[in-house]
Image (cartoon, rainbow, N blue to C red; front, side, top):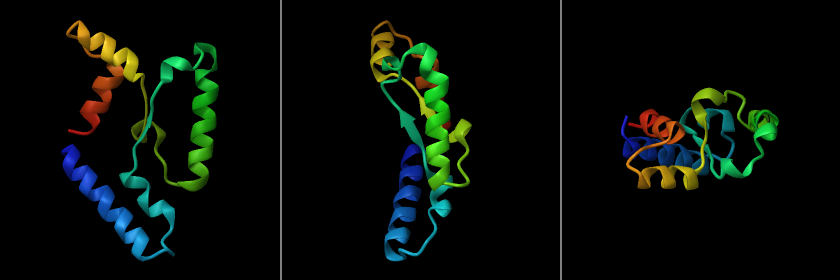
Length: 100
């Protein structure tokens, strides 16, 4: 599915939610992607705990959250630096592959 199609799907879901304020947020979980940017600023020894906390907090609001497919951890700064040398980081590549 192209990024444009996914954006259209997300916007449609958001519009439907706006029209019907009683809709449960869990219905939007399937079309939600969280990008945790600036991951390079999180200390390496704290990353797993931060991830765990983020997943717990998001799961409270979005009961059907699938963290492995809906949360991407990356550093745009690192990805940008690596691209200067004609390469791409694994995290950035993973984000691109998920949404093609």
